Image (tube, rainbow, N blue to C red; front, side, top):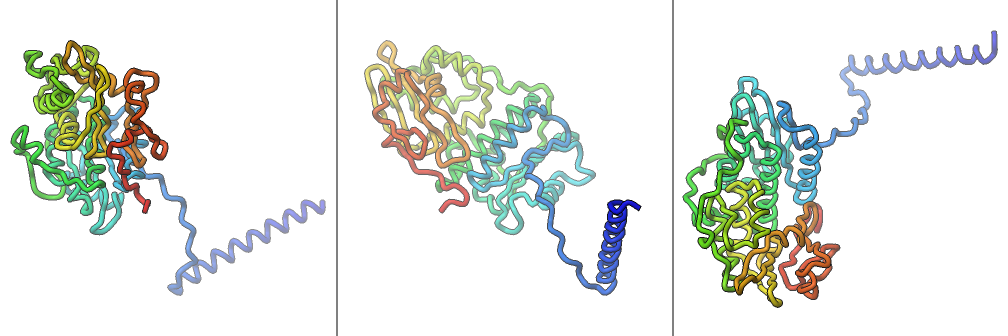
Length: 380
């Protein structure tokens, strides 16, 4: 017999004997009630932030949601999840949501749970927002009800779920950031605009929300005289009128307050009442400064680090909001210590106000604005 073949046979016999001995020892320990040696756990599966078990979100949109909610988790430690299901197996949606929170350990176990689940049952057309114990102060029912009634209902009915969810995440993220810097949700801001009649008790809110039943994501703007929201005598006047405009729903873009280019831009935006109010709540009552140079003005906030500056332009002696310049010259950020940065280069506003800019930890900001950094999860 070939010597190499003999060695191979002996090796296989030895290996088989070791396997049998190992199995026998394991069985022996089990029959004696002894615990076998611990097995090294397999690597944990990556957290899935959006679970679409009903197939209602376009597949190409899923990575975008995963990335965005991952940024929110890294920024704040808040575990946001969204789930679409085609049935609850006979359970109430409230019980189904509670079970899912527990099974997936959304936000962690115990009284300090820092997670929130947005669960939508396609067959029952019900939306449930389940808030973990540790976030009830951050997401009170007044805020969650406002989010569902004023925002989710409109976009779910239109069938444009991807757009509606992106805007909803923006609203949730802004509320998280406000809480991080110590600002409570104050429903009096909403009450100033309209009665807040859809509050409810309990941790989270459950509502009937139609999916794709034909409602427009943006009702036709109310016909208003363009002079109802006029350009301002001063930049401060224009900003005050802007806040009043945000509280008038449906929003009409064709008003004198905005530059002509800004009117066209706003007309193409799919706004919801909640999104307009989210802008209003971010700015209402916050301290700011204004600097002017020739026919340009910059309004920046000294009472909140979260809101990017406003750009204004004077035409025929009156000041108008230049929303197009805002979009071009500022960039929103997620996952870091600052929520926005100046990105303008070579434009008229950067030329006029560039001497007021400074670099802070890689972010270009206004030197004497509110530059308090967010406290990022895990930082000291």
